[in-house]
Each structure stands twice: as structure tokens, then as C-alpha cells.
Amino acid sequence: MFNRLIQPNIIYLPAIDRILKDYFSLLKISHKTFWKKLDIDSVRKIFLLSLRDFYQKKITPEELSAIALRLYYNDKSWTPFDVDSKDSELGTVLGYAEEISYYRYRYKKSKNKEDKKSYDSFLRKINDYYNRNRHFLEV
Image 1 (cartoon, rainbow, N blue to C red):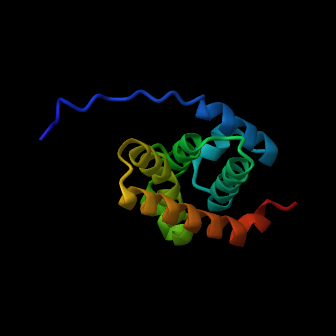
Image 2 (cartoon, rainbow, N blue to C red):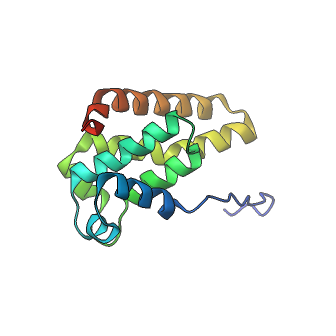
């Protein structure tokens, strides 16, 4: 049942498109080409670039979550199923990344230890993925 006592919070996120545009430029691919057809290697590299920026504190957890959501749920050319069928580990970690801002927010509001455990667990799994795959960013 809908709880009318809960007040919605509006969270402003800078344009994720601008961040993605910078990543496309680094990889020398066009925005149009990237979104037209699933290229799992490009999705992986874009995600790894966002993780690198997250660890360097250039993007926020909210921005990382929004980027992961865009990469995983591209409703124009691919679905999460398509990502999972090409690279199940990437799909799983994109799912974790899209959830971290939710659990971080919930913990900050409620101080619920389960939310904190989920947040910390997701961050560890994301970090493990980054450490195992960051070599894909080397040129």
C-alpha cells in the first residue's frame, strides 16, 4: 500500500550523457555507434572507465548507478538479458552498481544495518570486478 507519509526526495544528477560522451571520446567511438548495437567489449570499457572515475572520486555513487543503469537497460538496442548472455559477470556487476546509490541512500536515512551490509557487499564485488578487469583499459 502507498504510504503518503513518506516524502519523496529529489536527487539532482549532472548529465550522465556528458560523462558518457567523454568516455566515448576516450574510446574513439561515436554516441550513435555505441547505442546502435551491443558491443560487449565497449560496454565493459565504458563501465570500467566509470569505475575508475568513481574510485578517483570524479563521479558520485549516484552517477555510477545511473551509468550502470543506462549500460544495462538500453531499451533501444539491447536488454539486460543480452548483456548477461554475452558476459554474465559484467551483467551481475552492472546490477550491483545500479543498486549502490539506493542502498547508500536508505542507510543514510534509516541507519538499517542490512542496508549497510548490502551496500558494502556490492562495493566489494564491484571492486573485485574492477581489479580483475581493469587491464582492459590499458592500450
